[in-house]
Length: 179
Image (cartoon, rainbow, N blue to C red; front, top):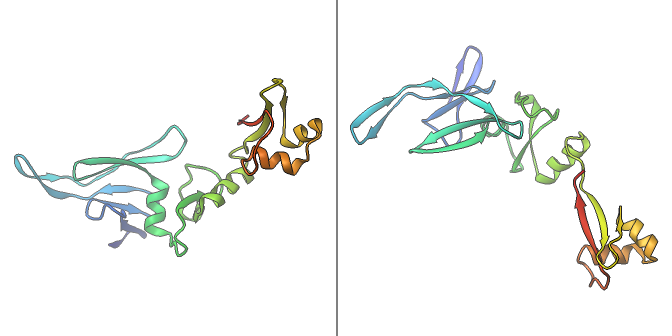
């Protein structure tokens, strides 16, 4: 269902139709409704829902349906309600990289790969650094390339061994550093 209130479009929250509505600006309201309880019928008043910033910096909200509470992200609710997804992409990206900026023009549907590439490009994440450890000698190398040069092993062969595409006849293994 779509409404227009104060020049702002209001739609039902996808998956919570009849329970919650969301505005283009990201405000979520519980809809006043009658529910059956042990003591008979009772009225649940309509109210504006409270959001919070979770530990990862995203705006989250707790929604209740049939006695079960689920915490979800505001940007997902907004995208499902207002942003077309013709390619059926599974994730939402904040275009400017600001996790709390949930304006519709800042949100887009993306694949996981597109989301990760955007995060690296915006320097929101550092790509993991692959170090190589020699378990026989204890020596560590800062890259596969450095290990290949120091040990006189062709780079493509060593890369294949360490990535599991070839049998690894060495004592070498990849270690991931997230620094």
